[in-house]
Image 1 (cartoon, one colour):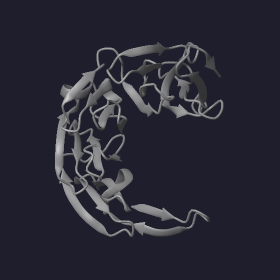
Image 2 (cartoon, one colour):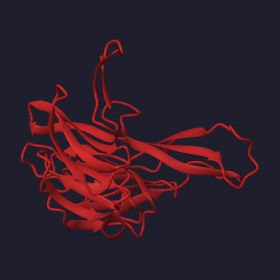
Image 3 (cartoon, helix red, strand yellow):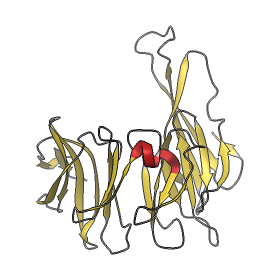
Image 4 (spheres, helix red, strand yellow):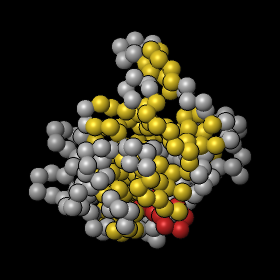
Length: 269
């Protein structure tokens, strides 16, 4: 179910039972720009999957059965086509399929993830933004791909960026182009990418390696860290015991947080 909480008290105001596990969801303007709706990927007790849209009062607008039932890792609402209504982008690991649907539920386009996007079963993260001059595009962390509104591949960095985990688009300073931040989960690297797919820099010195431990990049984003108008990268890494290391059960994880100047080389920790 989806629980609606009171923002002031945290009290549960409403529970929306969708007959299954809501694995991913987002809010967006699926009908018009005046009313927010909910889009959710629901695993119906491992029997089937569906994409469900609800209005702001929790009333079901539509429901479409999907070819897969394991929704990973994200569902995103955003106006990709420029018609004033948000599209819905999501992936299903068991079907190895990525879909973009209109706000009314109809399929806009779909991709096979390992064949057409990146070496994975699903898309870990994505962003819809005016990355290039002609309208909005959809960029994926997995495969580091940029697609136009019709699903045409504009560029891909899948041979250069290993297991893209997080992607974000920054609003640049006046007169500058947008920039994409992409992080690699297992490679523990950060990349700054231009709208045309050029890697402007990469950085891999976040956490010092240590025998018997693994490091995984878990999150990252653009933030205003150092003052008004700043545009910097924050990246988080988890440090844990390696499966083959002699480490006691229950060993806590350590979280490292690093801030990087987005257009410069200096790193703050």
